Every structure is written in C-alpha cells, then in structure tokens.
Length: 312
Image (tube, rainbow, N blue to C red; front, side, top):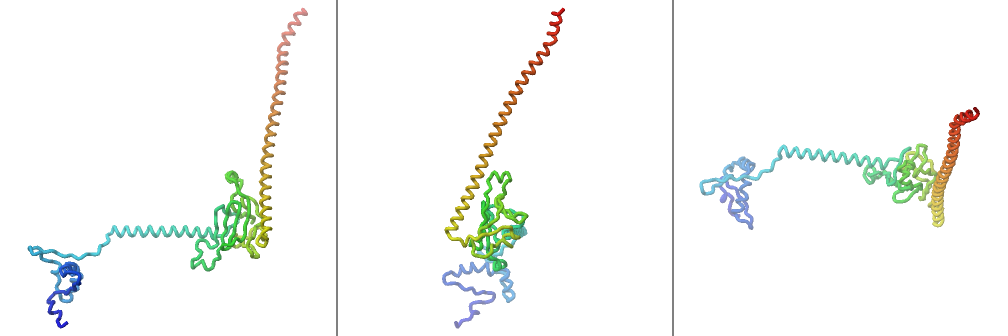
C-alpha cells in the first residue's frame, strides 16, 4: 500500500488485473484483442496514450502479428430483406386469423333471424368467442343454444332452461329435399324442427318467462311454453311415456300408411293387368270375326259367277 502505480506503469503502460487462478501470460493473450480495439485505442489516445502499436506483436523472427478484436456481425441487405418479408407474412397471418375469429364470433353470438336455418351440430353462444375478455366479458351473461337431430336445447350458463322436440329427418328425405334438417325460424315467425311445426317448448328453469328474445331469436317466435320444472318425478315420467307412446303411434301410422299404399299399388297393377288381358281377348275375338267376314266378301264374286253359270 506504500507503493504507487507510477512505480510499475510508465508511459503508455496499462495495468491489467490477473486473477489468482490464471497465468499472467494467458491474461495478456486474452486482453490483447480488447486493448487493440479501435474504439479503445481512440479512447486512450484522447488521454494522451499512444496505443496504435498494441495491435502488433513481434514474434522474435523479424515478423509481426496483428491482433484484431472481434467485430459485431453486420446485417447485409439480403438479411434485412428476408427479415422484412418474414414480418410482412407474420402481419398478414395475424390479420387473417383476426378476421376468421371475428367472423366466428359474430356468427355464434348473432340472434337467429326470420328465414334462417340452424343445422344439427351447431352451438350458438350469446357471448361468442370473447367471453371473459375485458371489453365484452363483464357485460355478457353466458347462454348457449345447441341444435341436434330432432331437438333444440337452450342453456343459461350450465343450467338447462328449455327444450324443443321435433322430427328427425331421414337421409332420403334430406337428399330429396322433402325435409329440412335442423331448426327453422320461418318467415311467419313460427318454428319447425325437421320440417315439423312446433307449437310448444318444455321449460325446465324455475323462471317465470322463457328466454327467447332478443337472444337466441331476433324476434319473438310463435310458440307456447309449458313448465316441466314444477312437475313431480312421477309426472315427468308419465309425460315421457306419453311422448314415447305418441312417437310410436306416429311411426306405426306411418308404417301402416306405407303398407296400405303398397297394397293399393299392387291391387291397381293387378286390376290393370286383368283389364289388359280382357281387352286382348276381346280384341283377338273381334279380329277373327273381321277376318272371316273379309274372306267371305272375297269369295262372294266367285260364288256369284258360279251361280250365274249354273243358271245359264
């Protein structure tokens, strides 16, 4: 502590600390490129130190080795162009995703308009895709409308609010366009499921009114509701059995009508066949008589000449 740095450093010397674990030669080798950096040389030059020769070291054989500091890699024009193109593609991708998400959000959250059809497998959401977002989440009450084959269910949160039962379209009916599969909000304000007009809905919630408008329907549909929530368990089972019996009866009537139509068709075919056979028989007999009369007419002149000759 009683010695000064000037006792060790003279002129343009630079003091470099040497860690205990390293040799001074190794430290000198590692520090050489740093001290040879042009920025360091310029900084020392402003302090009156000439470090221009530090970048050169004699090998003892008459040659000098020039030390060069590591440079920060520079970006070429090609790299900048590639980076710019990647940013443009990423921006376009973000815009496309935003448009798709916005379209799905609008489709799912918009109420059903007059004349619209919601196909089976579609689930509409009152809050769309943005439920929980700071802008929409706080002011949106979650509600869902699920359309399946022959049935429409409406949920308030996770609670079933009401149900509509309808007809399930067969594949042949859909292909022939004689049955519209799914929920229809007809132009006159009525509802149909599987092309079957709907007059009643089953209300399962304890509320006093069934939620129909302004969501999921844009206008109040022409439908009445009856409360299932107030029925006892036995009454619900009885109603279920009545519905099943009614469905079975409708199917039997449908099957019976199909069988009757087939029998009528077969009877009609048999009757037509018999009429054709009778007509053919009559036509055949008439043809024979006409042929016989024609032959006699042909023989008449000969018989007349023969009678004349006998008379002479």
